[in-house]
Image 1: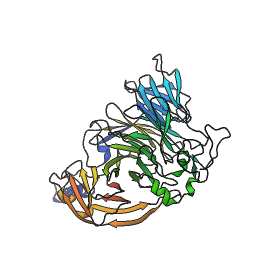
Image 2: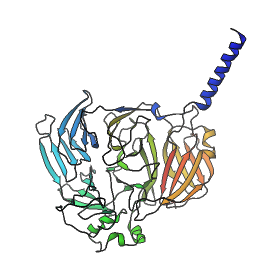
Image 3: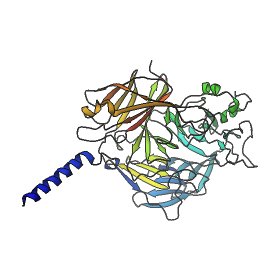
Image 4: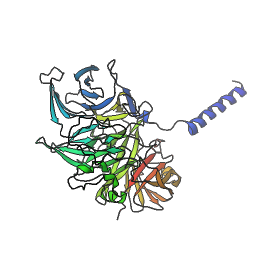
Length: 494
C-alpha cells in the first residue's frame, strides 16, 4: 500500500476514534425501554379517559366519546364491552365481568352477567353530588382504600361558560365570583363512598384534580392543575377534613361562614390550607399532571418498585415521585422518567400490566396532547438514574441506581442548584419569585459510590430547590440522562 494512503487511513481512523470519544451520543432512554403503539379499531376516536386490566389479562379502556372496549393481548383484537358513557374518566376493575366507571353524572357499576364479553347490566352506584351543566365539571376516580371505601374527585366549574337552567343539587351562588366556582355540591371536593353506599365529603380545596391514587403505604394522593389559586401544578397528600388551597368549594363545608370565599384575605386562606407535597415547575416540568399510580411490579419495570409515578399532558415522559416525611408531613422531589423519542404527549392514564409493563392512555380532548394507547416495557438493563433525594440539615443526599465515576461525582460543577417559590394568590398561575442560584460548598461520595452528599451555601423552607446535573456517569460510561430534579422544601430538618 502506498505510504500516503496508509497515512490517510491512519488519519481517518484517528478522527473517527476522536469523534466517537468526544461527540458520540450519550446514554439514551431508548436503550432501556421499548415503546409500542397499540393498534386501534378503525373509526375510533381514541381520546383515552381510563384504562385498566381484568384478572384474566384483558386490557380495558374507556374513551371520551363513551365507548368501553376490551383488548385481548394474545389475539390483538378489540371488543366493545359497553357504550353510552358521558365523559368516562375513571375505571376500577372489580372482576372479569364487572367494572366501576366514573362518568360525568355518576359512578356506574357495569356488569356482563352472561359472560359473553359484552355488558348487559348498568347500575347507578352514586350520583349524590351536584351538576350545573358547566363544561368543566369533570369527575375522576374511583380508587379504593384497603378497607374497601371508594374515593372520587369533582372538578370546579369555570366562568368560561355558564350553567344550565336545570341543575342537580342545591344551588348556591356564594362562590360564583372568581374564575372557578362551586355552585352545586360538592364541586372542588374529594368524596368518600363508604361500604354502606353513602357518599361523604372528605377533603376540599381542589381546582381540576385530574385523578387520584394510593401509594404503596396506602396514602391518598391527588394531582391538581395550575390555575387560579395554584401558582403551578401540584401533587397533594390528602387527608380527611383538610383544606388544600382553592377556596371555591369551602361554601359546602359545614362550619364555613356565609362569606364569599375569595373575599377572605389571602393570608387567612394561606393559614388554613395544607400545603402540597410536590410542586411541578410549570413550563419545563409539568403543565397538566394526570394520574398518580405506584410501581407494584416488584422490579419488572426496572429498579423503581414501590415508587409513585404521575403522568402529564404536555411532555413526552411520566414523572417519578420521591417523597419523605419531614416534620410530620410529606414532601420531596419529582424527576422526569424518560422512555425515548417514541413516547407521545397527552399521557392521561397509566396502568401496570400483570407482566410489569406500563400501559399509557393518551388524550387531546380539550388539552394539549395526542390520541391513542402506548405500551412500554423495560429491556432488563439498569440505567443511571437518581433513586432518592433526601433532605439533610445542610443540603441533600442523592442516591443513584449505579455506582458513579468518582471523578465526575466529586466535581462541584456537575451540580447546579437554584431555588424559587410560587406565590399563593387568586390570579391564574404564578411566575417564579426570588429566583436565586445556590452555590454548592462541598460534595462527598459514599464508599459504594452510589450516594452523593451535597452541602449547599443556604437552605430555606418554602422554596422549590431545582437541581440540574452535568455529565454524571459510571466508570463504564453510562450517563445520567434524567438530569433535572426538583425538591419541594416545605420544612427544614430540625
